[in-house]
Image (cartoon, rainbow over all chains, first blue to last red; front, top):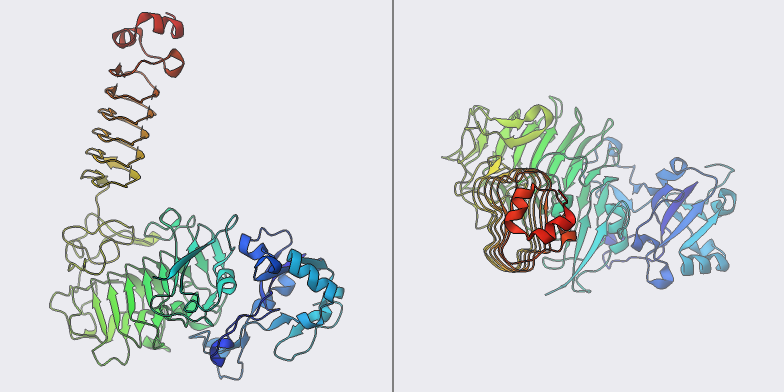
Length: 143
Length: 448
C-alpha cells in the first residue's frame, strides 16, 4: 500500500513564471508506504487549516507511484535529461501527476476536507489521477 | 521586525517529515505575511531534492533552513546528523527566492549519467555545511548563477569530491562557483575538486575570497577575483586566480586529521593553515564546529583547537544555561554568575567544577574528578561523580540534597547540611564517614 501526500490548497503567485512553481490543489507532494508517520502539519486536515490530504491506495506500492512526485520537465530542451544545471530552469511546473479534485465525488471531498484522509483501491482512485503533460486520466488495471 | 515562524523537519514527531514537504506546506507570500520562516532540520536521512520557488520573499522576510546545534554534524560527514540525499540526477537544494539561507546542513548529490548537478544552487547564504557529490560523478558544490537573490555569503563550508573531467573541463567540478552577485567566500575547506573556487564573468569586481583552504584540487581557483582576495592556501604550486594575494600560501603541505576518511579538520601538526588567516570577525566569529575563532585565525572551515580545553569554561554573563566540555578540561568549569543550570564534563576534569554562583542545579563529572566538586553557592541540588573521586565532594552551601560517589576514596564533608540517611547512596569507609556524620545517623544506614 502507498500513501500520497496531496496538496489540498492552491498556492499562487502574481508572476506567471513563479506561479508555475507553486503547488496546486491535487499535486502529489510525497509518496510513502502505508502507515507512514506523517508530521503534524502534514496530517492537519484542510478544514483545520492544513495544506494537505493523505490518500491511501490500498493495492499499489510506493515504488509504483513514486514517479508521481517528479516535476513536469521541459523535455524539448536539448540535453535536458543529462544537463540539469538548474532544475528550475527546465521545469514547466511542479509535478507531472495530480489528483483532479474536480472529478472527486462530493462525499469524498468532504471526507478529505474534514479528516484529511481517504483510502480506496487503485481501481476506484485511478479515474481521478491526471497526467499534467497529456491531461489524460489514468487507465488500466495497473499503474 | 517580521514575525518569525519556525517549523521542524523530523523523522517523527515534527511538523514535516522532509525538507521538500516543508517547502510545499509553507509555500506562500512571506512579504505580505511579514514573516521570516525558519525551517529546523533534525537528525535524519532526508531523501529527495528540494526546490524553493514560487514564494514571495525579500531581504528581511526570507527562508532560513538550518540544523539546531544538537542535530548538526561536527565538521565532517555524520550519518547520525541531518543529511539530505538528492533525488537521482537532481540538485540537493535549488533556490529562486531572495534571501534564502542554509546553515549547518549536509548535502550529497546522486547522479547516474547526469552532470552539472549541484549540492546547493542559487542559495545566497550557505554557511557551516558539509557538501559532497556522488564519487566519480561530475557535479558542483555550491553554485550561484542567478541574479537578484541577494549578495552571496559562502562561509565555513567543507566541500569535497566535486569532479569533472577533460571533456567537460572547468565548467563543472566547481566546489564554489560564482557567476553573478557580489560574493564573499570565506574560510571554506575544499578537497578533491576539479576547481576549488570559480569566478565567472565578474571582471574582478564582485567575488572576494579569503582564508579558503584548497587541497588536492586540479585547479585551486580560476577566474578574476576582486581586489582584497588573499590569505588562501593550497598544496598546488599556484592559486590559479588573478590577482594573486600577497599573503596567499602555495605549495603547502596540508595536514588534516584523517583525509582518507573525509575528516578535514586541521591536524595539530599542520603548518599550512593554522594561524595563517586574516581576522574576519567583523563578519563572523566561529568555525564549522561552532568553536570561536582564536586570537589568530586559521585558514579553512576548521579552527584548530587542541583536544583539551585549555582555558576556563567560565560563564561570565547571566543567562548561560549550560557549560559542557566533551573532552579534557584542564582548568575550571567555574561559572561565576547566576543563571547556569547544568555543568557537565564527560571525561577528565583535572581541576575543579566549582560553581560560585546561585542557580546551578546539577554538577556532573562522568569520569575522573581529580579535584573538588565543591559548590560554594546556594542552589545546587545534585552532585554526582560517576567513577573515581580523588578528592573531596565538599558541600559548603545550603540546598544540596544528595551526594553520589560511585567508588571509594572520597570523603564527604558536609559543612552546611544535614543528610537524612536515605540520601546517602554510597558506601564509604566508616573512618571517612565518622569524620562528618554523627554516629547515630551512620549506624542506621551502614552497620559495621
